[in-house]
Length: 176
Image 1: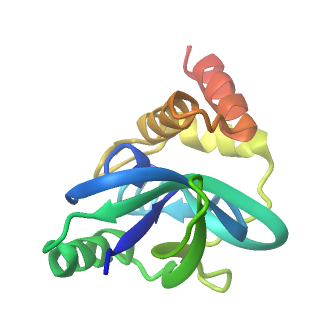
Image 2: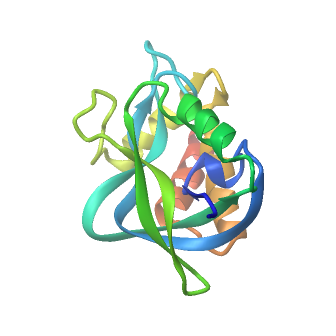
Image 3: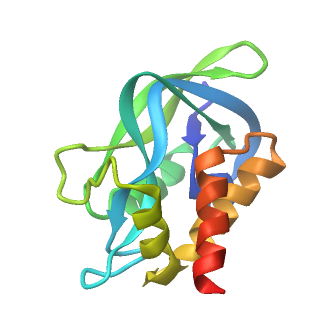
C-alpha cells in the first residue's frame, strides 16, 4: 500500500524524502495559515519566526500536494518526518483523508497544529505576521525564504494563495 504525505508548506518544495509521484490534493476542514511560532527552524526562542500550519476550521479546505513515498522508503520517511515536524510537539501527526485532483481519495500523513500548544498563534493580523517574517531567522535560515519558497511554489503548481501572496509583497516592502 502506498504511503502518502500531505504537503502544504515547506514539504511542497523541500520534502526531504524520496517521492515516487505527487498530485494536487485537497484536505477538508483545515486552513493553511501562519498560526505557529517557530523557535527552531525559522526563528529562535528570543525572536520567534512564523511557520505555516493547518488549523482545524469547520467548512474550510486546504489545497496542497499529496506526495507518494517511494516504495521501500516508508519507515525511514516516517522517522525523518517525525524528527523534522515534531521537534517541539506543536504539530500533531494525523492520518487524514485527502481528495486527489484525479478523483481518488487517499489517507495521508498530515501535520496539523495543536491549538493548545504554547506555539499556537492563530488569528494574528497579516500586518503583524509580515513584520515578524521580515526579520526572523532560525536554524534553517531566514523566515522570508520560507515564505517566498512556499508562496512561489504554490503559484507554480496553480494553487496561488492570496494571503501568502499578500504577505510576500508586504515583506518585500518591509525588507526593501
